[in-house]
Image (cartoon, rainbow, N blue to C red; front, side, top):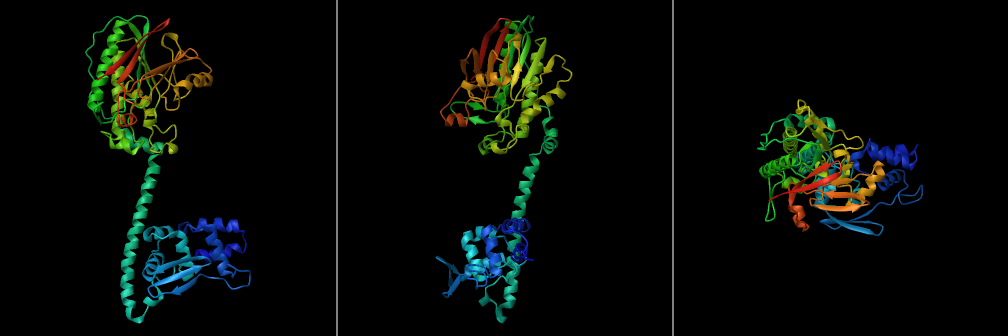
Length: 459
């Protein structure tokens, strides 16, 4: 039964609203609106454009030779006979296209299509030819033409099916279990270890804090203001750890706090990020967590204990559109899991759980309360007040990242310190005229408070 007769059948026992919903549910491919369903029912029950019992008023058709003029009320449109034939070829027959597919293919407004469809009584079960084409002499040629047209419609339908299959794959990809299965084999492939030539020293009671942020692993930059690649990233990290260990010995640091403030991956959040990426996001994650593991192992050789804290940034989400992303769908949430397995034999490396929230780090170097956040959800001038009220605790320092430049301000005796990025100037920051030095930061704490800060910058 076609949808029009079904609509008449439903209206006999249902309200208009129930009829609309039932027809759209049973015939989704028609993409019908309320007016179309109501007009179809009234037309078949003699109520279209008139009172009950009066004759229905259909659009008027004038034959002008090569084209028709179709008029309904004050609306009037012209349609060539060749265009009408194309409509019937696509909309009628076994392998018909939907209204939207026909309108897109022939570039016809939907309201014009429905006026033509009503005027000529075009339905899916109609023959795909106009009346004057159907004669005894050309029936055989029309059959051959129908076969060719069915082939064309087959490929249009096939393309639509492929698009739907791709959408289904994207939806499946977003599911966490599927994601784990897809990446687990690749992210465990080992990379070459970093090597550090540092003299070991005697440790004392001070504690250090190393903030790592905005590595953007996989980002490729070549400009007047900056060069960055996987090789340059390794060079900068090697320099960072060698200087950090030098400062550890200088201050006799006994314990290290390492904070990952997020965006260690460049990610897939925009088309532009994929264009400038040196490797895909799976390889970015594989490289980033293993570089982090090498850093923790190197520091653990120099101090009694290393405590590692980790949050995540906006570049590490697994979906491109921000509005479609869930907080838990983020590559960097996997970092502690990968490190736990890899570092299980390093007993002096502690992976600190996020007691309050995965987006808020809480540490106590030498007993001084500090917070760490990525910064994409916090404005520097408001973060101290917001976190103090949220956490019901007042920290000495709040460390943030995200903005890729160094900045420090004080709010009600709370220092808010923004970190530099390891990657430095990229195309986005260049475009908004916001250049800055590439770098990371190391802090030395004593029981009295923050003793000194090392702003470690790279060429």
